[in-house]
Amino acid sequence: MRYFLLMVLVFVFEQARPQDNCRKSSPLFLFDTHEHPRLFTDKLGNHPQFPFLQREKGVTTPNLVIHFVKDPESRKQYPEEFRIFDQLLKDIGFVNGYKDLHTIHVKKSFVQDGAIGNLGFYNKDKPQYNYIYVRLNPAGEGRRGVPAWKITGPSGCWFYILHTCGNAFYPNRAEDENACCKLIQAETRINPLEIKPNATDRPLHIKISFYQGRILALRKRHGIEGRDTLFTLIRNIDTVTTFRDSLGRHTITVSSIDVLSRMLVCRDTVIQMRPRLVVDSSKGRIDSLQYILSDTAYITEYAKSNVGCNKKWEIALDGGISYSSIPRFDNTTTHTRTDGSHPAAELAISRIFKPWFQAGISAGYITLSYQDDVAYPGSASNTYNTVYVGKPIIPVQLFGKFTIGGPLRWQSNISFSAGWSIVSKDQIVNSGNTLTTKPGVKGGPTGGVKMSIAYFFSCKFGLAASVSGQYFSNKAAAMDYHLIALPVTLGIRYRF
Image (tube, rainbow, N blue to C red):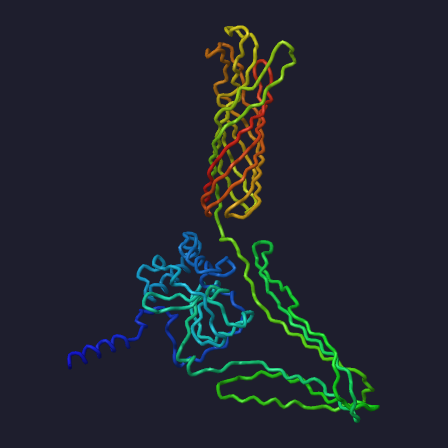
């Protein structure tokens, strides 16, 4: 029996051990018991500690928190900020830091207005990372409190990341248990009361309206998110009734003076409103009264923003087939016709200046050819010759591309290009034999336009389908060629 009781006591002791067994070496978790918290009423976002976790960057779900934490761009753009964030994760029990963080460890929560604790900040002037001991009551936040991501470690230790500013916050529970006071603003208003000497039935017009205000997130220019409010009438009551009132030549009006005051409210606070009454008997006779009440409930809707893609370069590789136009000679005895399709390819690299515009350089691989029945030396009579203007012809061009659509999923593009074409292996073939006569084509100016549709699976990879028209103006020994190639291609896109 003694051994059984001993085992029960050991089990109870183990269960009663505090869950807070993390290292907590960061100043975020350390409190000075002699320090008085300052009242923090500024708007959040002036000194972001972890910018890659701010709501304005598109972090609106736990999945996006994990996406931006594990995105190499976050560590590349904010190396010092990310190092501090990774140390906080190790302090609450993640042995490998951010690598062990998953969506089950991130929960959307709210920090109550008036909460006391350490708030992180970043001072750009020094630069300096530090924490201040505050009573959190920032301006511009919702009625439910300050929205935040609660990140919990394997052993139960946790801390907050505030949505608006991306700053860390950890409450001092001892202060919260002892200090339950809040600073409130109270205003008293009393509708005027009219008294008449004689009793009579008088009409009363009652109108009650209930509205819903939706605070919408709007995407403005330069990627800055704004707010707008849309009001909707939910219910309306409009009726006329009667009540017993005094009727006389003069009406006595009793009203009060509006009182506006700020006070500190605790658990044992008692508030008494004592408005001053003012009597006015100078008003004339009134036959009817109106009572109008309007109430509005507000809800906030956040815009579904795309994940920010900060890639600056794009490599495009396309391949497919190309058709060539047919030259027309001013000769009724010479005939020309098409030579079908040939393989085509293009490699391009471009700089992404704006989400809707990029420019770069490209090199293509196109076979320009057609058939004619000219009697070249060595050609068989009554047969068609295959004339290769370029096998291949390589257009090297500068181009500008305009994009409609976001950086992820579907987008459409149109490109304009101009450059110089390089001719290789121009020749004439008849019945499988290469003739001694050559077109003698030289390089010349070229230009084109391309239209494509692309789908990006991520910020880096995508697929595209394109159709383009490429104009060639090349001089040969016998004539000037003005041919158009029509490549139809499929390709891949890689951004970095």
